[in-house]
Image (cartoon, rainbow, N blue to C red; front, side):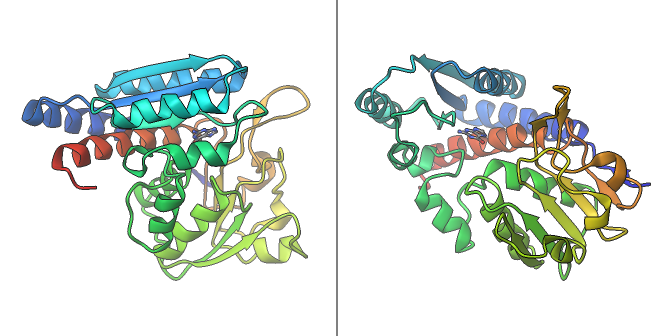
Length: 286
Ligand code: GUN
């Protein structure tokens, strides 16, 4: 029987800590941290994510602004909006919800956001800083995973860590953060041969593939820490992770559930980055 890593509880603790820190920051500086989220189009999942981000901002005491644009928005219009927000001193964090509708370039958008307001940590400048160990902002989902591991009292140093998935948002930065924590890291992906031979060696296994119930018990070393980053709908329409929880839970030492594991941590880390952005703006650090 694995211990459950309760992301809902841990993220609530982090938001409570941030609320106190924000109160003290506002009292000392008179500045209220502000996050502006841009949503282009009407993707229903994105609408839910954006709404949740706004709610989290209110909970910790930030100002939150949501700008919703039609799917017909041109690249030039989106660029102009980002330029305006980059220049607005009352805005500390800018987030453009992905994916963008067809015809808009994610790459161009991510490059346009000022690195100092890039609370997603997706700008190549911030990605480069992270890889070099000069952390500006940590990418929210991998940082959330690291926080779950740390707050569960699990040490990464010297452990065999296997990440399944190599996306820019999760897999790649996840591997770097585990390496920075002195783990020995293997990244597996769709072209990996004998995947289970790698995953069975993992003391810490992070699944970020995007396929429902992909990781089964035969792929997991008994006693492993299993972190599930996946959010999928299975055939019955139920929310499920990348890990087959029913078969893996009995043999793992720790496991994250879906929902209620990594998901709530992403937003908590976004809040942390936004407070950091406001502090840096006041200190004129970047
Ligand atoms: N879409 C799914 N996850 C994310 C995220 O972390 N940031 C942004 N901007 N878009 C997303």
